[in-house]
Image 1: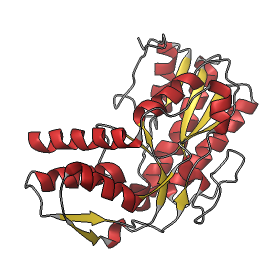
Image 2: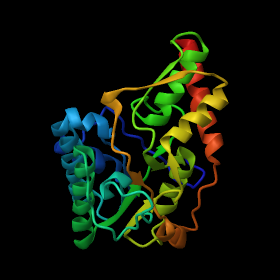
Image 3: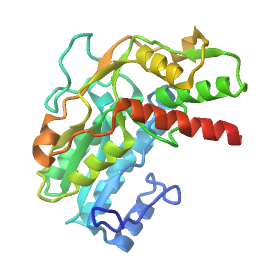
Image 4: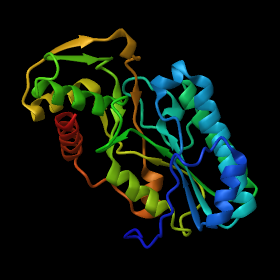
Length: 279
């Protein structure tokens, strides 16, 4: 039971969203009042080498969840968790993305999420209570180091504990992204489950653009280490900007981020310190 009063029935790797029969059976069994669809191949970088997997999980899986909900839980609110990546890159100095902005996805991951979002709009037009969430970058303890902040944190922890040479392997440090703490993101999801919140698309974002290089500087200071920086060509992405405007979410729910970025960064670093020490 959550503090918001929901009884949570978690479905993890025991259910493959690519298997429609299994998804429909589980929805029928649980008869949920709400579905938070988080199952995804969530790495833009991985999608470049495994595009078909991203499409099957992110688009076909979403199709299965929506159809199962329409047939077996037609009154349930369905939160489709998408990504700010759907909007694509913006030029430096551009305004933050709003929900009416056109999609310009740049990776198979982003394209699969954009297609899933459009499919959700189709089911909403048919009467299903679908809320499309476009969550920008967020992080917290337990996140994979395939993502930038945990990658930096793991490297910092390994350097500090003598498990790694004092060298950070990085991509493009001039890219700008919008970061949130996972606790603030979960708070947004819970608020969007309220049936009084209108069915629509909602950005979940801080509205603050942070240069990736600045994140690394803050993390090095927090870890108290000096290390050389080496650019890994495999990690390099364009020096673009992706920042979201969450005004619609604030107006509909009163949500606002509460966890300071420095606290969020420290939590990720502490998590990797513990994981590296236990390895």
